[in-house]
Length: 518
Image (cartoon, rainbow, N blue to C red; front, side):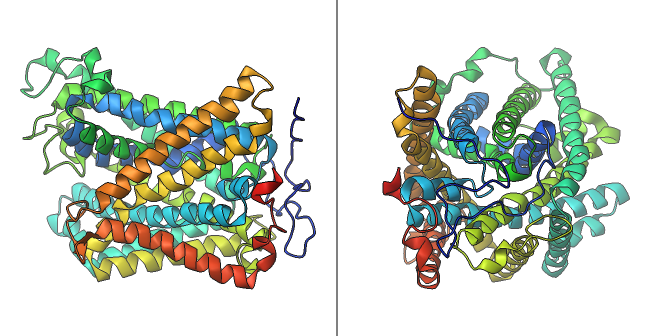
């Protein structure tokens, strides 16, 4: 029988992960026992930004799969749940804030681990810039609603005003994250509570005003057939809807990136991730069913399939569902959702950069911990600067480029999640015969989740080649989304080669276990 892995605690020696000089690397100086189970789960939920995801994804998903939207949400939840089991098992034996990076280095060696870390970092930078843009748009939309002034709402259309406001949001979010996970947790309790409360009110009132009222021509009665994924008209429509669904669940792994700062770092983060996933899938299913019952899937008026309201469904449903007095709450909730996620999303990127720096995969300056806040201050500021520069450059370069960069996000998500899932099965390969529990949670479930996400990755890669994907722009006849997605991964390869020359010890396997070490 294979020997069980020893559990590592924050501050303990990370066995098998050596420093650049060949010595062992110990705890990174983060503030331990700063977050409990509830706080960790709240961070995971906040990073996903459920209200924002719903308002921006309900319409496009209905456009792809019609009334089967709830079924597709469930289908997207499945691979994420299976990958969450992989994260939990890996965290049990190696609770390291580098998560995907550290674990894939241990399983597959430094190069695959470095690229997995890069996938997480670049995906997070893209999301941060998108969230900042969304927060800015809803900020002016909300001001316009409150003041009743179209001129105030139209300020969002002024590119200079929009970018400057966006940079201000990024700066505030960076400052809060810079002050450490304790400050982050305190802000998030209120923002996440507000989101879930508004969603609960929306669901209750939408169901209450559904077909029984007789006043809504698009309203439809609930049917259990909505939960049947095999009723989707075509496989292409199903995979398109699945990609949107996977995006809606992305971000729960933020629970794991604060594992070294969590009380009970071996068990609590994994449990928090599963708790966050349960809250998310419950919220998504209830909201999808309620919205579908109230508005139907038509392409006109308040119908969820209306292309004119697809990018912001809640803006169209706020007054009809909640009334004029309460309708503004949905705008507040979307703004709170984007702002909360903007702030918590700094956690995974900063801590991944911290871990990569600690183990010699990035310059050592990013490993500095603020002496008072016990946070990776240099890495957090670097992430904030990178996000601001990226968004400003993309905004002034081309609106199409910005849109296509966001479309390329799904590629990055599937890339690093699937590698992490495969890493779990390989890392524990010697223990899979120990018990049925080990075989399922350390092997079968992660491997299945990884294969599902890998399939979505390659299908998306194929679809991206078509210029019609995304904004419709192309480069030499190839879709811009493909060029951007593959280009960002290629940038990672170039940076990795530059770091290989600067930090050869890491790439020789002296830092972290090589693939053959397991």
